Amino acid sequence: MDTTEETRRTALDYVDSLEQRDWPRWSALLADDVVYEMPQTRERVHGRDGFVRFNVEYPGDWHLAVRRVVADGRYAALWLDVRVAEDRMDACVWLEIGADGTITKVTDYWPDPYEPPAGREHLVERY
Image (cartoon, rainbow, N blue to C red; front, side, top):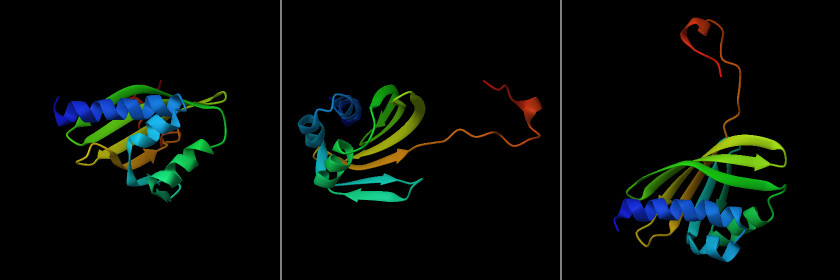
């Protein structure tokens, strides 16, 4: 199996083990010194133990489903359908995989919907 396929499998296992709340399986995917970042809130968590605790203690009844995964070498991008209680949203997650196959960096993007600027209605279709 090549690196891209291994990365793709790791990305899918990352989401599945989170959704299942299988903390031992999920934490085994992470490097000891993994870094987790959320650019919109400018939050960062250093290390496996802190990242596991962050997820174990995350509030709400949240659920994840992979809409799309793209892998290239040691990098993967995931487009996720996220549900927290009745709220639904999209998330984009970027993973970096180390030489040993563990995840060394996770960057979560949580885009919020917004109204487009006026003046381009003739160029687009709204859905």
